[in-house]
Image (cartoon, rainbow, N blue to C red; front, side):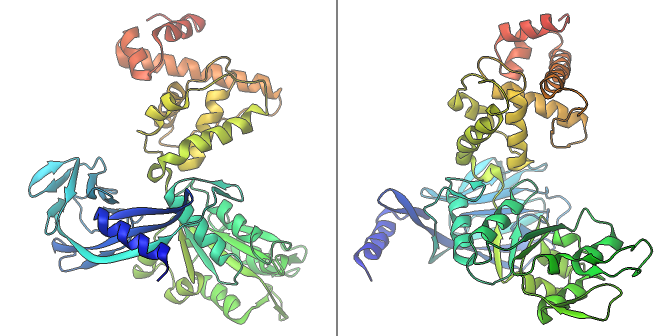
Length: 464
């Protein structure tokens, strides 16, 4: 054991910590996480045991959770356990029926050996273990177009840079908007195939009858409408990488054909008897829990294991709030290039609002927010008001992620200004309705200055 490793062990023992971030010369090197076990004492999954070696673990009825419990009384994302230097923290995630510790409803509570907590009607028992998992981290703060200083992203960067030079198939999992395609693109750029094509196929956006042709190609006359021969993705990416986005949407009938192509490394175009050899790397992504899809019979087990030689989980933005200032500045610089300087921004004040938001649309939603905040603005940028405005827009569009759009038949600046004006009108009108016309209350609700709200009311000819 080296002196550095011996010092690391002494650090963990001295602190008695559950999670310790080890650094060398100020750069994160690795994360030491104390393992623990959860025993399901009652409920549909009674008797099940799960061993955890990660710093964050989510529990709920939703398939995106680390532990999925079959409980009609549990929320989709019910609670999470965070491994922290002070101990193991159980945190309720605004569940409908609450999280109970020894029968008492809590928002947060530290767990000790034998602590019993309840999600819906499911009771679980917490059992810490003596083992420690060492998770290596990358020193980098960006990879390709992905950025992040958080431990969660440094873990992603470490896995990506480790396996990028190999030929291994990679499965990228993560919620919508986390940047799965950007990660696949970065892995390709850092691979030995970087000078060859990177071909993207979105399995969720193609009609069932089109996917096979897009993947494998077809000859003229292979089916109605096949007026010319077409090269499929696997041939087009010769020597490079094929990225299959939303692989969980791939039709069950096509899955054995894809498996055959991957195993034999050859493809046959629709309507042709000619077999063509291929040399490509395959990276796939999904926002689904593919293991559950396999259990439910919606995804082939053999294909799942063939595609998931390496698995990388992209964390949602709510689990890496320390990355928000960096991302904000990056997006501000991006949109500042489209027009004049928009003025200063108080990042610390903005983080009071940003850090408390759960970001269902993830990084994509943050980017849209920054664009909205900078549209036609002058002077200080108020991200808090823009976040509130974006949420109003989302609520009126059945949860759709806010995406500014405008007609292409008018100048860009004019289209942006019209969009902002309409948003401001909707924003002020809804705000005043919610507050019963009380301007002071409305300003507090929107976290903007009263005088600024009055200017907006006057600008749009409204009465409180």
